[in-house]
Image (cartoon, rainbow, N blue to C red):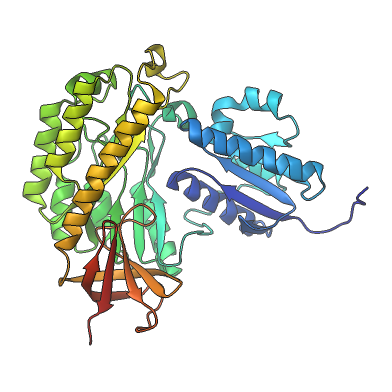
Length: 435
């Protein structure tokens, strides 16, 4: 039996899910550090906080398995306490308390003060923008809003995150200044929906206004836009992209499908024609822009004909970046009332077919880059390569630029001009341009 000692707790924060969760973990860690708590991210610690994801089946399974793993470690005496927070905990707290009672406490997505109290810390309101970043030292996520007001039929996020709440521009500028002071050079703007930013606070879509303030922050070199909803997209953002060199020619805009019938059932507020008109405007106004999108296949009622329409559209649009997911039937969503009638193997076949097409498109687009010069940022060194990205690529999800580390010396976080020497479907090879 273990004897209790007066040892100082070391709190290990484990993050699962999306970049919004990464951000939330960083805020939690910043608060703990301000309370003089010893805190680490995904290392050894005797107190564990698991920040869970509850978005789709795979993510929920990973979250549950992680909780069970740490509960076992608690029973084995390896850790002393296990706390669970985040989306899964928000969505299924009563079930989790019943099924996994050996967790010390469960907290939802809006219960940070309560979680801090359980960890022996006080919530400090004055800590605007104070975070312990867990990303490489050159970039950080900047969450500009919480929650979502969209009625998408397949999505459980409003159940877990509540309605849309924009963060005031002045708070975000303060946060960006603090990040820049710590050496951050790239801001990746995230929210459930960037398009809606400002409507609740300023009675107008204010993303362009926010960008014009953020570009003034000294030390920031790139600002990247993630997760913009297509319906109601504020077109003045395109002007800012063209006028402000710091705003990357990059937009992540999840379109989900192109069949008007399915878009209507998904409650996306758009059609085949409107989506194509929007993309045409993007291409005309900002021809350099790399568009990243995500698609769902196997949504209830998706026929072979719907899928073929989607497949042919992907070929025609030639998106620079694309991800494809199989539909996940989520309880308490509007789509849960529909029959999940596309067999799992058909969903997988369709997703694989889309990704095979995208792989070919990506290869062809990358071949066009050979011999051209690009400004890139170096994210890390891996094996014999320095790994970097162009402004058209976001970390973890997009293309990477590989530079032979046996031939060239570069520093993490450095911006450097390179010539592309070779290209595969998702990797570019390059050499620095001689100064």
